[in-house]
Image (tube, rainbow, N blue to C red):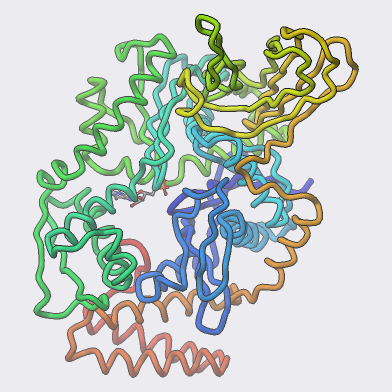
Length: 577
Ligand code: AMP
């Protein structure tokens, strides 16, 4: 049977995994690493790059790259890179395609099926968009799993005989999720989940970027438009500094000039852990509300929690562990690499679907993370007021679930009803998120108050189907929730796949060289001007060798470039600062 792979499609990094001899293992990518930056680039010659090489390219040519597009999944936003326009679904699809190729290469098998993780707080549109991105990448998406649930699966897989309550705190690049769960006799039961879909490690980096720009009298948003090279370089400097502050007491950041160069006499700023903690405290404060909500929904006191598990690269920041200690009076656990735990859990979920013997004693139940309902009108003292939200499925209901509620027409001879579907917790719809609508037509004439039923079915992928019907009629109206999501029919899907197939892809086997080239191009703006021409000459030789395609010449120039880097005091380790 062909393998089903588990994919963590992250805001900053993505990874894939599968079960090897009963144990989840990560799959290395074309440059030999397990984390693939979720960055897509288009080179000067129009070739598409995904991953580490694109991440390097982003520093020197931000207009040729797109990143953090997961934040726009489910919207109609398009991003222009290198003169071409892409939707977030297409960009995600390119990342998925790259992971699929890595898996095919590594496993030496056709890989056509996958489990993909999404933030628990992803709404219906975002889930549908993720599924579509998988289909466009030639993958049958067997399951969409919530990221904290996948993380919990990794812990549960390795600790299945215990009996305890866990709290998973997942702060990734762009989203924050909290999940309360019980483990007992091989059963993993998600009790409650809460989160924020616009809070992640990238906001911490941006906070640092915005502060340093402010010191130079600049605003992040306008500088991004007017001086993108300055912002791209500063963001990369701040990302490195943020990571270094995890292990170091203080760091020095060199401020780039308006074209993104780090000149020898450039101003520098020293930041220590205390000042960083103060700077990001408004973001840390935002962690408390979802945690409190998950505990409240699960009717749980902090004292009932056995372990607090940290997941997502951004939980490496000491401010997050400090928050857990202070807010929950618990020492957080970090048994697995926080970058990898979701991907590994996706592989466990894939094994559950494939009925793998290694997981035959494991059972998992999940919940619907938000309340789902429809808009209704209310009558106050004879006055009809629209815009009220009535829940049909309450948040933290165990899934799959199917629930039906009766409603009534409000006007005499009302022939149709527009069922508008929302997700959220507010009693007024305008404060909630609209996810679609469904028109019920053919209501027979008659007085107001004619009854009809609305049924919501929320499946294990977190995808909602809405049905409405009149009790006296066999006809059922079913949704295609198209309001916000870019929904594709078969033809559109085929067109989108054709578009992706017509792109020129950078050859996989040359990605290591492409990454080195882009890394060195980035260094041109960083090395001292005395060494710049030496480095540029070596880059030229390397680029010429790459264009010639002569293997030996490429290898020779590659080694020459590494040697120069080493004499300049740089070690090519790619992304790992
Ligand atoms: P993820 O989506 O789980 O890959 O999370 C990636 C986020 O974690 C990014 O915002 C990274 O900047 C952040 N991150 C990764 N490693 C560290 C670290 N050592 N210290 C602080 N943040 C980190």
